[in-house]
Image 1 (cartoon, rainbow, N blue to C red):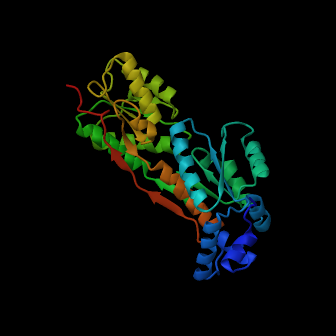
Image 2: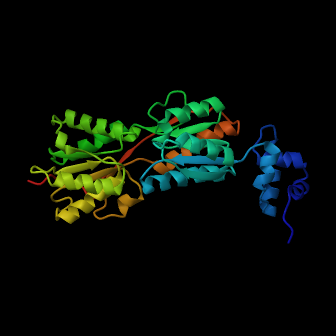
Image 3: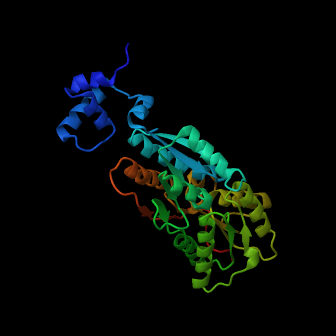
Length: 336
């Protein structure tokens, strides 16, 4: 059975090859009636344009690159799913590239990726989203990009959430349960999220009239393993905390694991909560109390803003999304 071509679509829709191409590339200036006729023919014939042909005709790759340097597989999988959804809606493909933003050859690797794959634009995730040399390079070359949770959002496209406010709200929840000894497993300091969530933790303590205790603030790295290490340290304290707020779900699950290892009941003896509400939050027992950050939607929204500019449909902007509290079984009243 021969492959359906763009000429077949043109004949079936009683239009020209050029008109079909304009409809498929979502170019303006095509009458709605003609556009609908072409799309109906595409659907009826099950036409799938070759990416290589589209690239030659438009001088585009029809590919979006997703760059990340993040130890949390749950977070990256959610972002990736959102980016993929937005790309597929516009007949774009996605290229995913893990990187070490602290490596000496970071920029050399990025430039190599851009040269080999020629993406039409990039989605940047923390901490890459704040890498000065990369941002300067993208601005110099004019390659479009959108950022997820950048520290400085002025003048760039992407998506943000008020993480400091959300972290303070989680501390409010613990205080309302009667907790006065609240610890925090800090996120990676090179991520904006690590900084904002620590600041929110401190805000929550302050408005509850609770003093900060240095031994209750332990550094983590947004990974399960770092959550285990930090929780072991906290649970070994002479006056151990009655609640542990981890800066992401992976570290919170690590803390639950460490509590089980130490024979400490969650939440009867220690409440544990996280941030993000990735899939792991409902795969652990007890189910994790956490801040719902719509990570998948953030990946999708950032990509939609990027594509808005690439397709000439509008001016990309920085979009703000909201958070929600997910109160589950891992937090409870402070022990007496």
